[in-house]
Amino acid sequence: MKTLVLIGGISQNSLSKTVYNQIVKHNNTNLTFGTFDISALPYFSQDLENNPPQTVKDLQNAVKQADAVIFITPEYNRSFPGVLKNAIDWATRPYGQNLWNEKPAAIVGVSLGKIGGFGAVQHLKNVCSFLNMNVMNQPEVYLDASSSMENGEFVPDTVEFLQMVLKNFENWVEKTK
Amino acid sequence: MKTLVLIGGISQNSLSKTVYNQIVKHNNTNLTFGTFDISALPYFSQDLENNPPQTVKDLQNAVKQADAVIFITPEYNRSFPGVLKNAIDWATRPYGQNLWNEKPAAIVGVSLGKIGGFGAVQHLKNVCSFLNMNVMNQPEVYLDASSSMENGEFVPDTVEFLQMVLKNFENWVEKTK
Image 1 (spheres, rainbow over the protein chains, first blue to last red):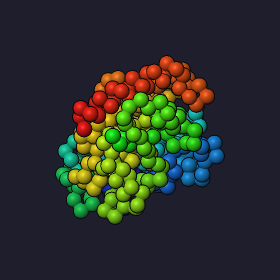
Image 2 (image 1 turned 135 degrees about the horizontal axis):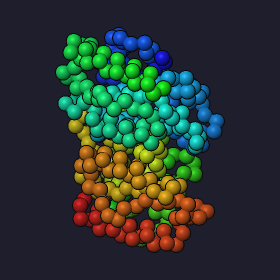
Image 3 (image 1 turned 180 degrees about the vertical axis):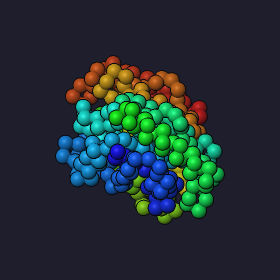
Image 4 (image 1 turned 90 degrees about the vertical axis):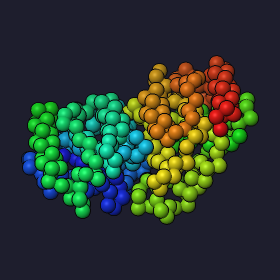
């Protein structure tokens, strides 16, 4: 089952990218993962939506073809990054075309602090709810990078946790897709 | 008193731009208004923050020099646009440099629907609270464009409401700056 992973942290060595790499490395399910470079998208504008550039069409096709979605988000100022909000909005335009509708989804928060992106995840959940995505409620994932990673790898406890999450998500996708 | 207005709708004829033009046209206070083209900013990335491009420095200077801030936001999928979140985040980086701290602020929601951007405004308030901005609580501003505007101008009732809001904001800025 094709799972599109959108990654909120776009810097070269972002924590979000580390999380993505660890998901791919420790995948214990039949889900297959692919990502999309959301930093290549222009800002959403109604001036562009009827004749969007190729990157926007590529994103929209990637969402259409996905059986499931995972958002990996850092927390910036108690919400999620603009670059991620912008990508989500593009796949809902023009008006009436909500490509996220009924997609099974999981949200992974990651930050350097102990609340692990909780604020970002909550705002993102509000948006996913409006978009009628089927977001997995439990287990929740709030990764504190200072205790869950070492040298760009998850520590063993986090690998175990991640694999439990992925198994649950695989079941959720099968049930709701 | 210099008031920086950030406008969330970047299309040429966005409702947010109409609201900005009407604020400037019907200004009944000693506030002076200027805006900034947030669509010229790159996406926030930690790779850029220590040596950011000139547009980022220009935004950061504009925030520093402002006595007050107004956000005018459309609602996209029950939150505010990525381009606006991105601009807000840039003025909080590198870590420890929150240029929004203690700025008096007002938030204006505008949409085509009757809830007038309520969802966008709530998310934006969460972020402003974290940033320790002094946001004016009342009067709240949720503009339903279908009833508040005609041919790109506010109807008389909306002009009256806007001027009441601006007078309150002027008092708020004087009290809290």
